[in-house]
Structure formats: structure tokens, C-alpha cells
Length: 434
Length: 193
Image (tube, rainbow over the protein chains, first blue to last red):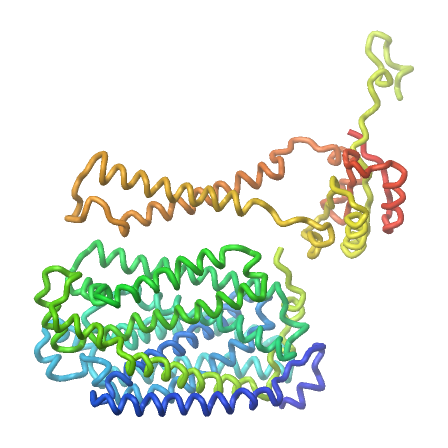
């Protein structure tokens, strides 16, 4: 297929990865597997039934899963709005959406560790918790498996559809394919919206089953988008440094990606604050407990790092047009946001590992001064930041990240790096910010 | 022109001062030739001149050597001032001047006061962007010498124009006209105010 479309290329650019795919993909695969194995060994040595390993792995998993949500959104909104500027980078996003296959495979260890990650799956916890019993109609294991299957049917179906049609257009150049994708994107957003919202409820809110926030799906979606656009900017820069798409992607496209990064950064903050303020103002114990867990000891610092690192500092940093148009400036904030998004995932998931300990739960229920914990629970806060735990977090991030990079290279390999015969490609190549 | 048929009681047009020279207007047939010409005018060192087109022409800012606008700084200052003012008054009203307890909440805490501060920041950023844009462009401009020009009417249809204004220190009627001619203008004419 690649040879076939090479002859028809009207674009004067290097649009194939060629040997670069293997040069990056195979080391990434090895590093990824090694990272996960080492983290698994450390986890095994903790004698906690792999609980900390699973939480570290799950944090890394959700990090990349939300980025895939962002990529799929970008591809679909591009078609639904007939966007012109983004055609040159759309294939990169399509390759990222193809990583839902990897995400489906990487979900298997999570399903094996379901009793460690989700306390609502543990029968004796459920038996003594009337709050959770109220939710048993939704929070039960068989239905959870059914939902996982439904989510991945939706994500795989949508990503496969848009990627396949786009690749088919590389060969045929048929403009009708663009119209078909546009129509599908519009009604596909219903599927996407429900799937992302409930996937966020199940995967991210499910680790804290007492808590509920209807805006949470939007929160996870916003976080995924801001980091997807950061990753997209970095991917494009890396390709151009290696002589790919050199004449196709230019400052104007980076400027628009930077605008998206800025907009999503603020949108994330808007949603995060809306969620926080309503919980703060309503002051219902079952809701505020979620934030209370995140204000104890070192968790308060993680919360503050999130507030400044994912919202206030990048907001100020990305405000200027000159930053978005300068390669170094945009790359700096892209890396910054990707780090901040990991802190976000860490902040969502990891406190539950600590809070699920029986001593902590008893201590918090009997607490009078929220900023002073009884001795046992306080010790346990610091325990959740010990060296083995943090090293597992880092190794799992490298591990899942390595597999993610390898999978992306595999999806990019042998196909043009941009939709070379898209009818709107000339518009995208000539695009300029007014 | 019609001085001979005008009764003597009325002042003749010839008796008035001749209209002041506003500048030289050059017409171009298409955006590309305008871009080339604009770059040459820019390189010749003119400052008081402008391009007029029926639609936005990409690359014109660069060809004209336009510096980036100061507007964002004014918007930033106005936005921050509005946000700070909102926080100040909320704090003063609720925690100092007229203390009341609502919903068992403290007199002062940030979360419930952020929305007002946020909206004030957005509102005054938007308003300042709008009004400073008018001010920087000297709007509203109710009359302009070019609007009386017959040839200039095509600027809303298919005409592309450069006008170098007489107030530019480099302006010299003959040399400037030669420059515009050499850039490939369809026509060059004087505009009088």
C-alpha cells in the first residue's frame, strides 16, 4: 500500500517514517517491558498482594488512556467542523487513537487486580458499607466487565473507522470519504461523549466509590485533551527534527496547537474549580471526604502542585502569542503539561491506595480537626510516599510509556505521516493565522 | 472651474486654498503584486503608509513590516486590575464592612469569591480589548480623504491599493511616485484632502 501511494504523492516532503520507526520502536518496546518487569518485581517484594504495584500501573495506564481520549476527540472534531488547518497533523492523532488496541490489552492486568484497585469489588467491604450498598446496582463486578467491553467497543470502533477511511483516501483520493467521515463524526460524538464520561466514572472515580461528581467525565476529558495536544506538538517537532514533514508543518500549525493547549488548560481549570467549589459549598460529608483525603500532609502539596502546575503557571506561560509561535517555548510548555497531567492522574488515583487502608478509614471517620490526623493515619500518609512506591510509579510510567511509543511507531510505520490526498490538504498547507 | 458662471457675490472656488496633498495612491491588480510592492515600500523606509484590500491578504503584515501590537499588554493590565478589584471589594464587603455569616461559611474564603473575580477579569479584558482596539485605530473615523477618491471605490470589489501619505518624512512627490510606478502599479495618482 505504501509503495502504491508513494507514486501518487503530490506533496514534496518526506512523509514516511521508514527505518526511524524501528529505530525508536524496538528500544521503546524493550525499555517498556523492562520497566514493567522491574516494577512488578519491586511490587512483589512489598508483600502487599501487588497492591502498590497495581496502583502505580493503573495510574500510568489511565495517563495514556486519557491521552487517547484526547486524540480521538481531535480526529472527530476535525471532521465534524470541517477543519482545514489541522489536516497535516491529523494522521499523527489517528495513530494515537489506534493505541486503543494497546490500551485494551493493558487493561487485562487491571481486571486481574480489580479487588486491589476497587474496594467496592471486595464483598466484606460492601457488606459493611451502606453507602456503597446503595450503589450496588451499578457498582457490581459483572456489570463492570460489561461496561469495559462496551467502552472499548466504542473507542476501538470509532478510532478504527476514522483511521481506516483516512488511509483508504490516501490510495483513492476520493473526496466522498471526507463527507462520510464528517457525517459519522457528528453522530459519533454521542457515542464518544457517553463512553468517555462513563469510562471516567468507572476507571477514575471508581477507585473512590463513595464520591460522586457528575462533572467528572468532563474533567477527565479536559485533562486528556490538554495533554494530547502537548503530545501532538512534541510528536510533530520530533518528526521535523528527523526530516519528516519538514515542508508541511509550520509555525502556523504549531500556533494553533498552542491555542488548543492554552484553551484546554483553562478549560481543565474551570471544570476542576467548578467541581471543587460546589463540593466545598454544599459541604456534604460523603463528597467532601474526597477532597479531605487530598488535603492531608503531603497530599496537600500534591494538590497545590496540581493547582499551580496544571492551571495557573501554564496559563500564564501560554498566554502570549509569541510563546505559542516559538518552537522552544511551545516544547517547554508541552513537556510541562505532560508532567502536570501525570500529577493529575496521581492525585486522582494514588490517595485511594492510602485511604483504603482500614486504619486510615477509621481514623478519618473519628476526626475532628481535619488538618491533624491521629498518629497511625499520619504515619500511613508518609508511607504512601516511600521510595519503593515512588520508584514503582516512575517505572510503570516508563513501562506503559515505552509500550505506548512502540505501539505509536507501529501504527505510523509504512503509511504516510499525513493524509496525502485529503481534499483539504492544500488549505492546511497554505494555512495562516490572520 | 465654473467660476465664470458664478455670480460675483459668491466666493469662487478658485479663491480657496488648493486642497492639501494627502498622499499618493497606487492601484494593483492582484494580491501577489500588492505583496511585492508592499515589501519594496517597506524597504524604502516609509512609515506613514498603508495597504487597502477587499479581503484579508495573508502575509501582508510581514510584507509591510508591521510590528506586533501593544494591545495585549493593555488587556492584561485591565484584566488583572479588574480581578484584583473584585477580590478587594468582595473581601471588604463580606469580611470587613458588613460581616454576615452565610451557610455557616467563614466570613472570608477564596472558593466562593473566585467566580465573581473571574467574571470581572473576563469582562474587563474583553471590554478593554474592544475599546483599546478602537482607540489604537483612531476609530470611529467619520471621514477619510481616500473615501472621496473615485478610483479607491474599487477597494471593496477587486482593487488593491497602497497609499503613501504626504506626512511621511521620506515623502517626495516625484521620487515616491517613481517608486510606486516601479513596483508595477496599474496607476498612481495624487490624493488631495
